[in-house]
Each structure stands twice: as C-alpha cells, then as structure tokens.
Image (tube, rainbow, N blue to C red):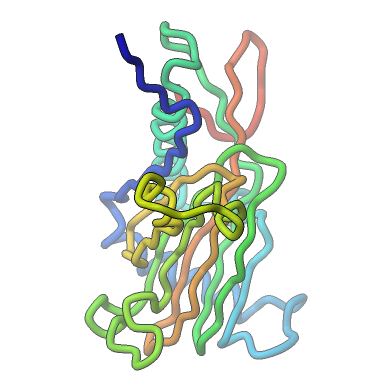
Amino acid sequence: MSEHLEPWKTSIGVHMFEHAEKINPLFDRIFKTMRATDGENRTGDLTCFYASQDDLINRIKLPEWNDFLQFAVASLRDTARVANEGVWPAEQVDLQIGIQGIWFQISNSGVSHDIHTHGNCSWSGVYVVSVDSEETRCQHPVYRHLNGATRFYSPLFERLGGAYMDFGNAYLQNSVVDFDPVPGRLIVFPSWLPHQAMAYEGSSDRVIVSFNASIHRKLDGDMLGRYSNT
C-alpha cells in the first residue's frame, strides 16, 4: 500500500471582477485625481511612480468601491478555504475577514518593484485597474511579455542556489510563476510568498490596487475588521 502526501502546497487564487469593464475607468480617474492633489508626496517624478497611503478603505465613499471590496473579500474567503482544506473544521465556520490596509499604485517609465513580502497579515492581493492592451504591452523591445507582469517566486527559491539538480527534482526547477497584468484580474496570495512587479513602460499607466488582510474564525461578539463574509 502506498500513500502520497503534499503537506506544504502553496495556494494562489485568480479571480475576475465581473464589473471591471464598467468600474475600472472610474477607479482610474479617482486614483489619478488623488495623485494630483496629494500635497504630502510631491517629491520626485510622480508620473513614473506613485503609491497612495494604505487607508483607501476609509477614504473612498462610493457604491462601486463597496462592490469591489465585497468582491475582494469573497475572493479572499474562497482562496483561504481551498488553502485550508483538511485543516479547517469539516463543518462550515463563520469567518471574520479584516482588510488591514488597501492602497493603489501608478507606475510607468520602466519602474519596477523589487522582490518583497508583506507583513502583519496572512493574505495579500493585487488587482489590475488599467494597463496597455496585451498586444501593445508585449511589443516592448526589451521587456516583451514581462512588461508590467507580476512574478511570484517558489517558497524554495532561496534553497535552489545550492541544490543538486537532476531529472528527479525537475518540479523544483520552474521556480517562478508570472501573471500578465489583465485589467479586472485579482490575484490573492499568501503574504509570505516572495513576489515582485516587473518593470513597466507603456502609453498607458499601470494602475493597480493592493491590499493586506487577516482571517479569523468568528466567535460570538467578535468584531475584527470592517468587512466580513462567511
């Protein structure tokens, strides 16, 4: 009798916002207006890179924004449930999902965001608001299909430098996963997973929303975070 175990799988959730085509242009205008009127961060060339404060959950008061937040929370819930299958109780539990911080970034002119992880949360997300069309984006003479992509690194990436490589551990040797910047796509990933935003240059800015979140089992009287979903 044989048994096969995969004890340390890494889950990444990929979700599409059904209202993106209608709502994303609104978000794009709001974010660029916020950038233009930001009196605290007027150092450097804001047309190359700008990151807002992580308090958008309280700053934007629109029904469209609430629709997006509900979509983000539902995506977090579904991704976390898959990741915790067999670990969470078999019966359905109520979850309290807290958005710890949410912000937007606008980049262009070859700006990238180096490899990093997120702290003080269990899950993070990146949502694409706007970017060049795929055909235009991939025609960049240097960046090609990686122009503006989000790259995730294997949890074992730092071990690969000294690892012995042969055909038996071929599954380790594809150490990165790249996601094209598709407007309306939300990637939900473990906060500890190393990732980076590849360099981007285009006729349109690369505009994204990022957030950090925590998930707790809801007990009577618990009030953690503003948004929750079961």
